[in-house]
Amino acid sequence: MAGKIRVVVLYGGRSGEHDVSLKSAASVLHHLDRTRFEVIPVSIDKTGRWQWNDLHALDQAHAASLPILPDAPEMRLARGPDGRGALMPITQGAAAPIEIDVVFPVMHGPLCEDGTVQGLLELAEVAYVGSGVLASAISMDKDVAKRLAEFAGIPVAPYHVLTRKAFIQDRTSSLAKAVEGLSLPVFVKPCNMGSSVGIHKVKTWDALGTALDDAFRYDVKVLVEQGIDAREIEVAVLEGETLFSSVASELNPNAHHEFYSYEAKYLDPDGARVDLPARLDAAQMERVRSLATEVFAALECTGFARVDFFLDRQTGKFCFNEINTLPGFTSISMYPKMMEASGVPYGELLTRLVDLALDRHRQRQSLERGYASQSCCVTRINASGAGDGRTS
Ligand SMILES: Nc1ncnc2c1ncn2[C@@H]1O[C@H](COP(=O)(O)OP(=O)(O)O)[C@@H](O)[C@H]1O
Ligand SMILES: [Mg+2]
Image (cartoon, rainbow, N blue to C red; front, top):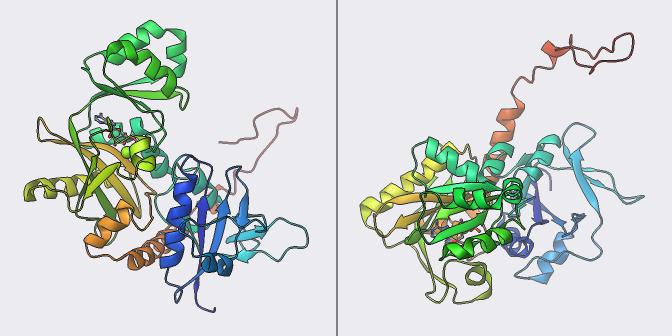
């Protein structure tokens, strides 16, 4: 094993996309280059329990969906005794901590992709694939992501943000604010969800209140967004010497779905047809590829991301819809398929993502952290014992 890079594949997670993660992770496990990487599969179950799964048993299972093994020992990931990231078994009499080199979080949605897990990995001082805390959190928030994109000159659909607090306090004026300058249909969306959960296409103003009531079940911040007669175009972005954007694809939800809903995404096998490459003319293709890298940069992403756009059928203009910093990674997921169509095969893509993670970690580790210069600022409590313990 000497010389191999230890990669933890982190899968499952506490979001509604737990089951998608199991599929993504099965694919990642299968394609990671075992000649370069020693793979350690660590699952997070729906209650948040971390378990170390036996790789051999998982390999033998050949499952399209990576199981969480019932007897897998519980463990946690933390900064190890020598200051590096390590897996710490938490059952009594268990083995010593195992140092690891890099974590590949193959999980999607809140508490997986939104900077929370990334913050834990930062504290554990371990390299990890994908965006850091800031970019992950920004990208998960549909409002903040759009604001930053707009600030960088990237068009977005007009929308209003409503908070649950204001909506409960004054429903009438919140509803009035929500419709200002917008025309039917509008889309009501919880700010920090995914998989179209809690999203409503509102076709009459009478239906807006009920849609908001439902969306506020999922989030304290909800967007009311101008509905667009749109084609849905996606681009995969990969970091390198320069940012690389893949050939774009188009998702065509089946006509019997009102939009690309949860049902169309996961329950209906004929929910959508994919065009890869998207049927765009050369100028449109170039435009959307360049917008994708602009969004990636504006949101301070690192590693990789899938950037989703609407192409307005009426105006012929693109607008940015959303970004996924840990996109689906099953063998039929759009991110790996778009990269493959652009000349980067799945296995090579994984190797590049791990290398990027290690490189970013090395660069950040080499930064001065300012400990030495702050050593004079020791905590002082005044004679009465009061004070907040800060000296600056
Ligand atoms: N402004 C809009 N105009 C038209 N369709 C929309 C709009 N917003 C969302 N949709 C539809 O809803 C789907 C899900 O919305 P999206 O913002 O991508 O949320 P999610 O993170 O759940 O995928 C989109 O793929 C699209 O079909
Ligand atoms: Mg979407």
